[in-house]
Length: 135
Image 1 (cartoon, rainbow, N blue to C red):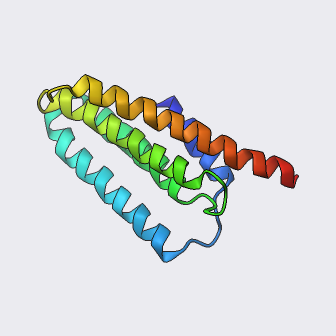
Image 2 (cartoon, one colour; image 1 turned 135 degrees about the vertical axis):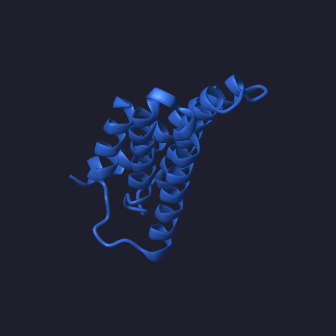
C-alpha cells in the first residue's frame, strides 16, 4: 500500500484546482468501480475485511488522483491508464484470492501490474521534465 500512498502524493502535486466535468465523471466511475470491487470482495475476505476496505480505498484514491492531474502535462494519459491498470491488477489479485482462481490469473496480474508501472513512470517522467523546464 505504500506505493499507492506515494503515488497519491506525487499525483496530488500536479492536481488542477478546477476540474472539468469529463474528469469528474471519470473520477466518479473509478470511485464506483472501487466501491463495487470492495463490496464484492469484503464479504469473502473474512478476517481481512477491514484490510480489504482500506486497501481498496487506497487503490481507488490513487486512480482518482491520477485523473485529477493537470491534463495538459505530457504523459497525462499514460499515467491515467497506468493507474487504472494498477487498480485492475490489484482488484484481480483480490478476486483470485477471495472469490475464485482465474485461469492464467497470475499472468494477467503481472502483465497488468508491469504495464501499469511502466505507463505511470514513463508518463510521470514526461510531465515532470516539462515542469522542471518551467521552474
